[in-house]
Image (cartoon, rainbow, N blue to C red; front, side):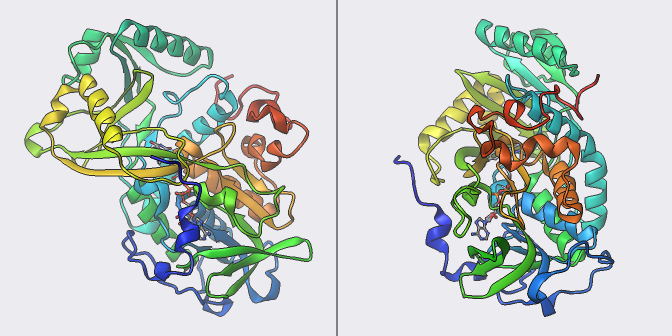
Length: 455
Ligand SMILES: Cc1cc2nc3c(=O)[nH]c(=O)nc-3n(C[C@H](O)[C@H](O)[C@H](O)COP(=O)(O)OP(=O)(O)OC[C@H]3O[C@@H](n4cnc5c(N)ncnc54)[C@H](O)[C@@H]3O)c2cc1C
């Protein structure tokens, strides 16, 4: 498979994208030519921190994946007049993602600053879900069921032991279990499992339901959804002033948020020095169905590193079992390959042999928005009026609550909260940019971790 250099959106622009069927039930078909006059009154809209320029919006969000939507929803709750532009709001990587909220089991060396943000977001999840479900009238499939990371051979076991020691050093809660105890917890595990880490705080949500709930919550909060592609950012008088759509409509805005996921690094009209260094990282995922007679097949997320690759099985309440994921640097390619499916099934089968009995219902590939230090870019850029909310890579679902809160702060007050400051976009353009690490490059981030960790 040749890497694809061309973002798919470039091909799709100007076609009938705006008429695509929405994968998200309840998504608004607001039309691409809506103007400020179409902005419905929002009960939440009481005050605007910024006057909107030329009759446009206070905030225009380019990209309606879960990150753009949560930003729009939270900003609307602050009383700002907000619009989102996306041909398919609620689409994007969330339609593929497994939905693990894995702050602890996703811990990697060198990502301690990101851990602080991940933990802070994980702690907000229960309250966030309750508020979102109330605001949208939709279930999100949030499940506080925990995770078991297991080892199949002595190398994996040594690796997991090391991870456990690192987790303990970071003050995280995880418990080492022998193979027999792992199988007692999850009887479908292979007899060869040598041990594992029980992490009761790493939960899961159904990202498709999360996206649908965010679309509904946005609509109810008065966010205008323009179902269209942004052709380019509009820059006037040295500041971002909104966006031009493919049909020539210009949507004016006092502040614009670039939240275009893996396409953020190729966004037309954004000055080169402000373009985020975001790239697509392909992930293939399988969905299986657990027949009622087999339930409960697994009671929590099972994950492992097998032959150097991550594999996980995420059991949903509704009987769906998600198996993921490959990690491939192939540009904007979203082909599902025989090799990808084979490797996922082979590795998952080594962990849980019984999966071969289950119907395979879906295979799909999506694109993670990767950044040089695997952490998001949040908040204002060097171009006045332009903010970024992108680069969430493999933790975008986990980081949804904190991203919404941090971006709403930045949009309403001009300031990011402390927990988000290490993730300012200027860490890649300022003096420390060459270190490509949030921990090393972000101003004021020399302090270890922060909001997330116990003292
Ligand atoms: C296989 C896989 C598994 C994953 N598993 C997990 C997991 O278990 N846990 C976790 O926390 N995260 C996971 N993730 C990561 C998570 O899904 C992403 O980080 C997150 O969904 C990114 O959201 P986003 O809104 O930034 O980007 P996207 O979802 O890519 O959304 C961007 C949106 O911008 C729109 N857009 C782009 N260009 C334009 C334009 N010019 N005009 C208008 N709209 C535009 C697109 O249509 C799209 O809807 C996974 C991702 C993948 C691919």
